[in-house]
Length: 113
Image 1 (cartoon, rainbow, N blue to C red):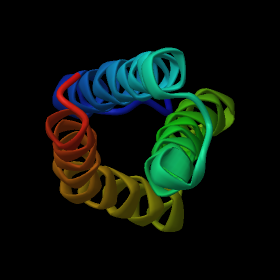
Image 2 (cartoon, rainbow, N blue to C red):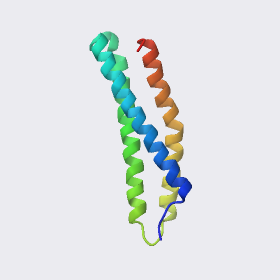
Image 3 (cartoon, rainbow, N blue to C red):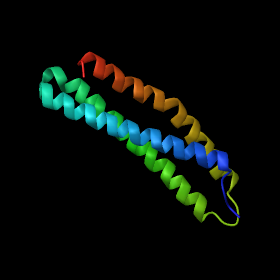
Image 4 (cartoon, rainbow, N blue to C red):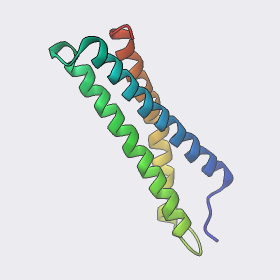
């Protein structure tokens, strides 16, 4: 039967948790930035960057969730192309998550949030 290894399941769920944390933090920082400084020329770039971070986190979360659904629907076994796609999605997310987290941290530092 089609099923991912327990390790891959754990990795995907961990990545999804991290992506939700990033989405939440980006929206929280966006709210604080708007509340304290408003939307103006000074805050525009940071607000745009936070929106982009949120969109990237949401897109990656959705991609991983959709892959989990495709895996569940793959019977009797997972195709090699789907396994390769899963591996690429995992590696890509593992590389991107620290960059998204760092971007949020830098914005918070720049604005003393």
